[in-house]
Image (cartoon, rainbow, N blue to C red; front, side):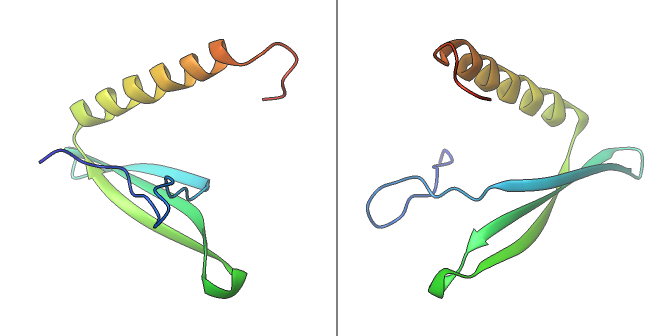
Length: 84
């Protein structure tokens, strides 16, 4: 089974803005990635949450490559004069 992006009841992608992150090495074999994000709760309240992932060095390189590719695509496709 392949991973699917989370969607809401209308079929729109659910987005949780990333507000901070940190990395560390664990046991010299795993990279720990901590991500802080915000989430809209019922009633319009905004909550700060965080999650930690353990990644192999190879997974880190693959993730970095995918993120870089997506970011470069967005930067190239941005119309001139648009703010970052």
